[in-house]
Image (tube, rainbow, N blue to C red; front, side, top):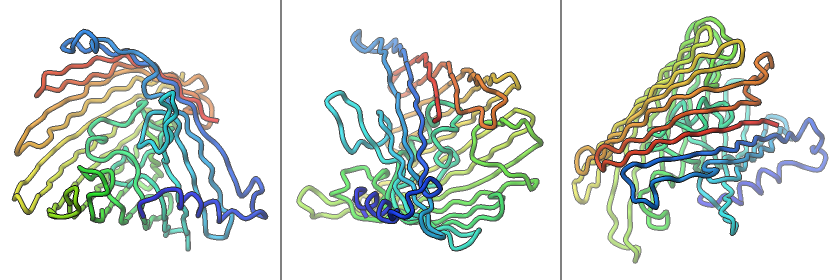
Length: 361
């Protein structure tokens, strides 16, 4: 389960020559150039100012349904986000956002195998192209980042008014040491409920400016694993438990999204308990002219029991949509925002001015 190329090969194997028609294969993607100017008042002179195309990326997705009740998706990202699998001399990385095959026995059940995002949080479940900000909330990335290899089963009612998923994964993104020194499986569960009988997809914004929609959800990760030393001996048992709760609401152009996080990790050999917490709240108000003021505030309080480290992240900005009357206004989006990071424990402060363009093709 620990290699990706085999999954890509499996997905492509399911695409026979007879099924390469346009209705069996779709290719789409996006470009997101990002320019960032960062000022750190407490840094050494060399690092006081940094600037560049930090966080720029391009994504390409190839997906289809070549066989009855089966589908596949291969989604690659070229840029600096995600765990790089190759690096050019220019520093450009390629990461696998998804390489999975799914089985759909009926309209309510799905079974997916491959590399994917674990459905632990709303921010993690939202596709890259419909995020309110150019990146996911910093607290979300502190408790789970990137993708993992595993198996996921999902039950959902019509229009996803109820959605429940459970799966097993490698847990590589949670492991504190190189995967070669860790043995263990990550168990994941997630449930989401939408009220008032109205569809509420994981799109971060109220572009339809419709009636009230409300969604609540909760996620759970449990990762029991053993850490071995460099010789492959002296195993130490660890139990890592993480929980999240989420709330989403949208009405008349206003969109609200908030999540809380809690972690308890126990090293049984040392009897050492690590506790961490975090949360964020974000809001945006989409106007018919294609303008959307946005704001987000989050914090993390890591390792509260042993070596506390508290940070907060204020963010504010505005999104511009040149085609507000389009069916999907977010196919072209310009964003200008301020992103702050305040590491209170280490007295490290950062102020960033960010400009980004998102173009879907």
